[in-house]
Image 1 (cartoon, helix red, strand yellow):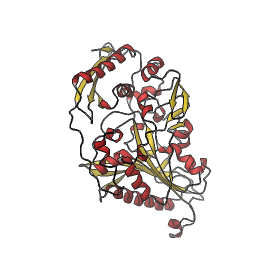
Image 2: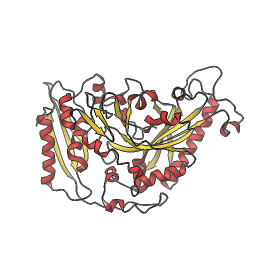
Image 3: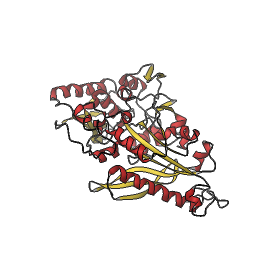
Length: 429
């Protein structure tokens, strides 16, 4: 349910703040760059293109791969491990990632002005539909099936930076658990009520209508369950700590951090589900918790996989290491590529009076370069006294399957240069 990438989708980037003001690159540049003129075909449906459309052919080409369902992929093994751990929970699969705005935002109490709704962060199919940015987009569907404990695993889509740990498509698992007045966890403590009968005051530690004693019990149940779950998946008693967090759909909320490679890293988000969210699903007498965890981040630690792009490869040298394995097998990935990086920089003056968003450029580079792109980042930016703005990007090219030549990379790099010059009207430095 909750974002495992340290709130990347909620980050207050300059481009997002500008996007809130309504600025964006021209529709013509978007359409010609991303390849869709009138409609886009996704799975079995066609969707009309409009001014909100910002998905790319590269992203669309990855829809339907369903790595978490493909035997031989480490994400499948991890998904099976999760299913076995939560064996008493209902398990849901939603193959189509296209959802409406209500499912992705409104049903989760995400405000209209929240930065996660901006085109800078979310892939819009058009003004009415997006590619789900979290598995929580299906939370209402699961609740309406009268499930009181469920797990949902799916591919999710976000516009983000490019490096070894981030990809425009990744996979997320959501676990959700409800409790009522007669739940054993409450009855065993002599409690037969979930809600306060008076003093409906929201505090840092509870929602308006929740009994503090009940919240404390559910919090303890949740944290104990999650800690055991993570230790089970990582095969060790790894150091952990809980950090208070904020999410629109839970209160109170926490992130779990683990100590890995001499550093604390956030591994998942969790919290007590907002009661209004449950009421909107027709559930009035329960309290519950939810967690959201990214499969790639967990699998990279579990199997010691260094690059997120490897999950998408069809290289038999990679897949053969996992194809005959069981979900409980302790596997350490053996590197299949020692090919060197090729690094190219690109510098240009931004077009004046046109909003520039880094994520637009990242998507363009990924769309042209595909899986040859290992990383893109801004390494320099400045503004002259006359108001001219300059950006320099470093693009790192590398294939896990073969050695790249400078000549073939230069062809791709020149394509990127030509596009931003001809379509986005930048001036090369």
